[in-house]
Length: 111
Image 1 (cartoon, rainbow, N blue to C red):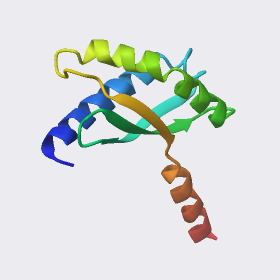
Image 2 (image 1 turned 180 degrees about the vertical axis):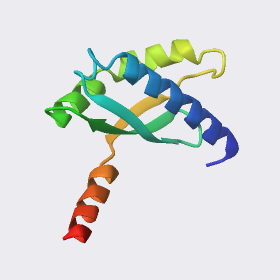
Image 3 (image 1 turned 135 degrees about the vertical axis):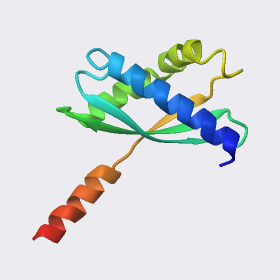
Image 4 (image 1 turned 90 degrees about the horizontal axis):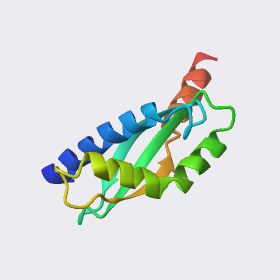
């Protein structure tokens, strides 16, 4: 990633994190959603957003709700960053299971 991509990715990561924090009760069904990584396409039109979801009874259900709300999320983030970006990228959400993976390895090492 070049410097411009990194700056835009960090801006979007910050704003998405605040958005998920604000909408935790309704959109995230009370779960804590953390934006772990954002990878932007070279033309800045697509942002791959990796999410970690904590404290949810059904992680897949929360993730599905976020996926179904991606157009609304893009619109809300677009309103916030409209002075910094010409066009808000499309968000493609992915579950980041690296925390679960590292926890599993940690548990195995403790045995």
